Amino acid sequence: MTSPFTPRDAVRCDRTITVIEPGARTTVQDLGRPGYAYLGVGRSGAADQRAFAMANRILGNAPGAAALETTLGGLAVRIDRGAWLCVTGPMVEVLRDGAAVGVRTAFYAPAASEVRIGLPPRGMRNYLAVRGGLDVPVVLGSTSTDTLGGIGAAAVTAGDVFGIGTAAVGDIAGVDVFPAADPPDVIELVVDRGPRADWFADDAWAMLLRTRYVASANSDRIGVRLDGPPLPRVIDAELPSEGLMQGAVQIPTVGTPVCFLADTPTTGGYPVLAVIRRTSLPDLAQTRPGQAVRFRAG
Image (cartoon, rainbow, N blue to C red; front, side):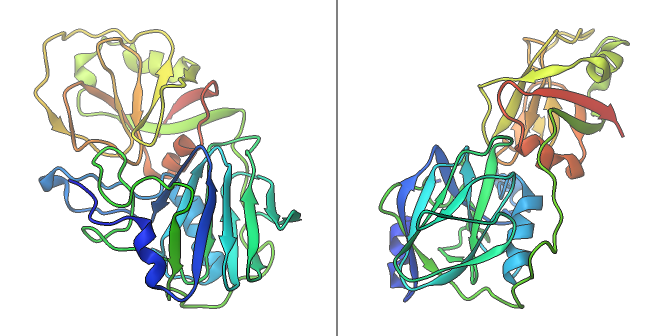
């Protein structure tokens, strides 16, 4: 499915944000589009829903107000007529016209000011939200960019202009109202046994839980690949495609886990040994290439 719009269409709004530098990978995200798996459309949405929700709570926005999700920072924007903004996710340097402003707190950006997000020392993804939310077209009930399905706006590029919407429904929160922690050295993901655990050797589950894996650089919003010892299977037959969900831990023929994230496909053909609990998905979203990952049984 091809997106019927680009963010450049948002110039119809009387208040706008212009992208100066897009960073490594920046997309528009919200709560996602659940309920369309029967059409082959995944849920998508903010990879770290916890940080995304915090941004909107701080700004007094509706919970699903669209924001920008950055990957390893580098985003720079210009505010044309003044607006309240907030950056959430891991600690990162945020500059407003060259002066540092706080993370996980609201700050005002006057007209023509520039806001820049640096490279977070830990974690992967930050969220830049604006009071009122981004005013971008909705596709199948969501503004999210689905990088796998090609649904929603294209990835953000320099020169894109986003309108500021009217999704503010409450007051702006005070400083330090919402405590948060940076990602730890070792990411711990809580898992339950998956629907195809019986395709693996008896000790595969214990091996999954005791192994310290390393996140591969071949990871993105679709999934996080892990390097480590292969998990032994007892059934080597091909598996017909079956439904997948965010958090599924699929074991392809190479034997090492692939942990599906926000833009997961709706079906897959490799056995799912485990499923990451939804409460651990924000931690998976902040897993950085080269970082250690462990699984813990729920």
